[in-house]
Length: 297
Image 1 (tube, one colour):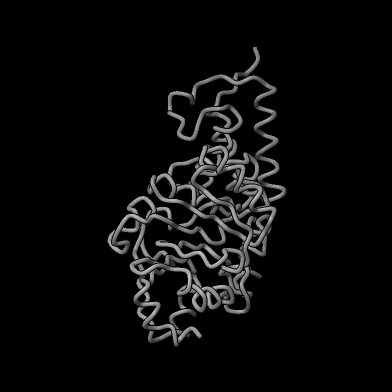
Image 2 (tube, rainbow, N blue to C red):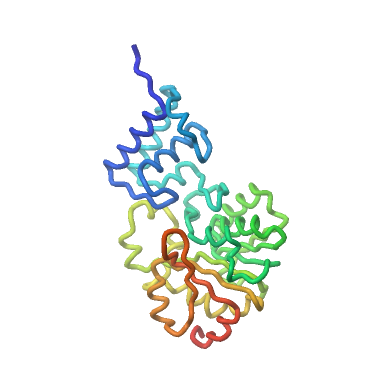
């Protein structure tokens, strides 16, 4: 009598495989089990949040072979699961991703969920997602601020092709403008009520020691000079000319937050706490940017 393979069997098999090979989990999952669930959900079309009652479902040999092929690529090539499935989730929304863009995982998602309260004083009429990559932050903001006009921009033309695909998938072409721009240079002097940016911010030392999974993401979207602040300095110099009064700037700088505060010791950055602790995201109002502009010039 042939043995029967269930989804539960495959999940356990995958978890053990991932643990035995010391994989890194930081692209939407935090454990071998969660990573296994993502791949099972993709391989067997279970949706983003499969229920436990599917564990006893029997699978065919062909389906099991397909799933094991995904797991073997995850192990041998260290490809993050979202690149294997071409799907990532941000603010509860599905996005297409491939190696032209970094995988969405920004803590800014929690700030979007709360509409940047209490720092954003009014609903924005216009907002900018700078360094948009897949477009996830700008698209999520378009859902939260359903009367705002949204601009998403990136220096990378290939990344913008991914962003456009996501804008189209979410039926937002009437409200989301897609612009190729190096920082603010391609935005024709436009001003916004809200500017959100998840720029490159990884320093050269951290980049050299990152797990192999990160090597599949575009280096240009991560690396920003020796201290990780090359782009952020430019942003802080130029942003005051593109932010409306009462507007705010929201920027993720990750581990480079320490270097940022060390360089600009007198600037009162606001560091909202999200999730389980420090987010590496700062907020500056138009007023604070104006008052401290001499530090950035």
